Length: 251
Image (cartoon, rainbow, N blue to C red; front, side, top):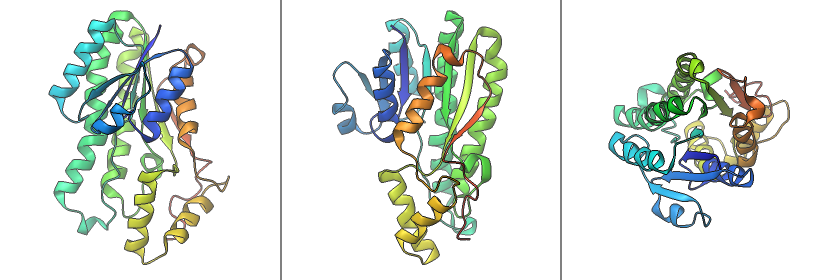
C-alpha cells in the first residue's frame, strides 16, 4: 500500500486531501498543530502533533515514517493566512510567522522527504501554494511573498529530484470555501471598509467561472499529481481556482 503524508491534515484542504487519498487506497499520515482535529481523524489514519515550522518535530515524524517503510507522496500543505494590512502596517513578527509556517514548513517537509524518496527511486511532492503566488495580492504581502517562494522551492526541487524519479508540483488554490477564507473575508472587509458579502462577491467575480473552490477540488488534484497517471508531470504550477482573471477586482 502506498503511503502519503499530509501536513496540516486535520482540517480544511488537508483533511479533504486525506479523505481523497484514503479513498484512492493510500495509507494516510497527517500532522497538525490542533490536537482536537487529530483526535477526530478517521480510524486508521496515522496522526502526529507537529508544528510544520519546527524542525525537531518534523524530523520525529519522518523518523516514524521511515520506520514504517518510507513515503510515496508528500503533500506539503501547512499554511497560515497571515495579516491583512498595507505593507507599512505589517509587524515583522507577523511577517515572520506567515513566512515560517508556509515557506519554511514546505522546505522542512521536502528536506526530510527527499532522502526517503531517493532511496526508493520514486515519489511525488505536492506543495500547496496559492494564486497569491502567481499574481500577488494587495494587503497580503507576507502571504503572497511566502506563496511565491514556495513556487520557487518547487521548481528547484523538481530539478534536483527529477533524476531520482521524484516529481514535484505546486497546486495554487483560489478562494476556498471554509473557515480560513471566512477569516480573510472579514479582515479584508474591515481593512477596505466594505461588507463581508461585497468582498466575497469580488473574489467570485474575479474568476471566469464566478465561483469559489471547494476543498475537494484541491484534494482531487493532489491525488492525481501523486498518482502514476501524472508520472511525467513535474515542475508545474497548477491553479485550481475557476480561472482567476483579477486577484482583487475591488481595488
